[in-house]
Image 1 (cartoon, rainbow, N blue to C red):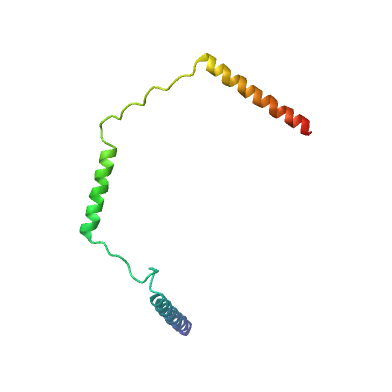
Image 2: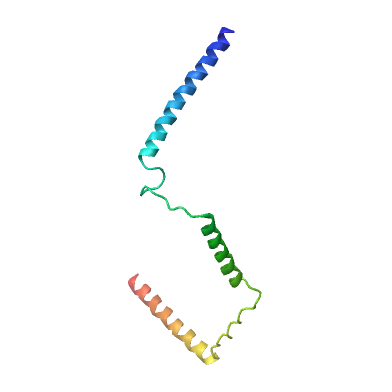
Length: 105
C-alpha cells in the first residue's frame, strides 16, 4: 500500500507543477493581448451574422437560378485559304529557327 500512496503523491505533485505552468502560459497570453494583434476584436451580433448569411444565400440563388444562361455566340471559322497562309508562315518560322540552330552548332 505504501507503494500506491507514493505513486498517488507523485501524480499530485506532477499535476500541481503542470497547473503552475498553465497559469504562467495564461499570464503570458493575456500580457500579449490574446490572439488578436491590435488588442481588440470586432464582435458581430447574431442579427448581423444572419443578415450576411441571408444576403449570401440570395446571391447564390440568383447565380444558380433555374433560368438558362444565354448561349455563347457561334465561333468564327477560318477559311481554308487563311489556314494555309498561317501554316506556311509557321513553317517559314520553323525553317528560320532550325537554320539559326544549325548555324550556331
